[in-house]
Length: 206
Image: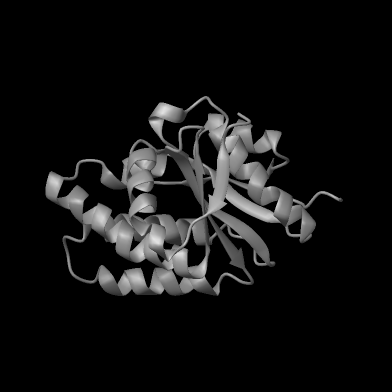
């Protein structure tokens, strides 16, 4: 665990981030729901959409952390967003509604469902949002997820910043609880898919 290194990625790291997001997130509950029943071409479309509409803006506007093991192999990632209000996600939902006006936009339609249902539960007060975190299959069980959390939560505590996230599995919920998060309100249910538990963490006094 002590050999795990965590650092902030920059725009030049986009290929590394895309690779680890694709590898680590392939079996994540929401990603599996988004890709369920899709053809190979649709999955390639999803990966391209992830790079252009998700990773690139995150590297420019938000905070992307990468974790590597002692050998230097990238083991996981996390994406954090400083939220002053919910306007950003309401704008995202509006954009997706326009993009799905034409039939057959399966991935965008599912992304719209996730966004709209999650928006109903998001806190309106300023906070730090853990948008995504995942560990590559070959590095799971080695403390990578915990290292990514500790790295950013220490800064959040220093800045007196509360943190919000949605846990997609019981295992991830337990991990977040060990780092000071508590369940907040009712779950977000995706159609024939996973349930996401909103969670909140007040900053620790340091």
